[in-house]
Length: 288
Image (tube, rainbow, N blue to C red):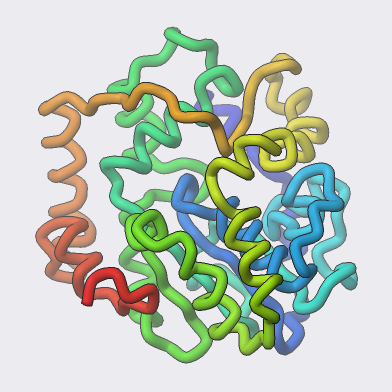
């Protein structure tokens, strides 16, 4: 699996990021994997399109910036709706500058099992890789997007900048009905109340689970599974009906705590994710 991940995208796809000419108003939804990216894609697209669901898969209309070329999409092209919007798992330092940026942070203790579930049945057969092995060899070692903790460190200096909206996944879960209005205000979009209500409904877990085939990875899979040597027909759904929670062992929790201490703790001084979250802005008003 690790060798396949090293070949996740082509040099041409990476070069397209470097050559992208950012337009005023371009929106970059830039998160670490499994931190609410698809949810935010749906919110941003709904706001700009009045809730259009006319797409095969969300990354068709909100392209995955660093993989767009590999999916047959020109990231420099016009988009049907304005502003242009992109998904990305790049760190702040690697993103093209000059646009507006929405990042979402999430607790590593919940990112790990979500990441594992996502790859299970796509990159490895169910039951063939343990959660502990996945954590050690993939999550802690770093995915194609790098290491989760490095993302937190990298984004921290720009939290609070006028062109950056920083949210947490946990806050979004507490107040999902407020998310579209906060995003619309950040993007300076004048959105009518009926549209806001539609976007709230269409970005709910229930709605997205009912339309799960529009929120999977069918575009990248169709273009790249054969290159990675993966069999077709596996699952890569990003919004699923509720599944039993994966429990992290005490040993695994200690391992994640140790990585936090060596990275975020050492760089920023936060002892754990809870203290990091508490220090962030609270645009959704759930921690005040």
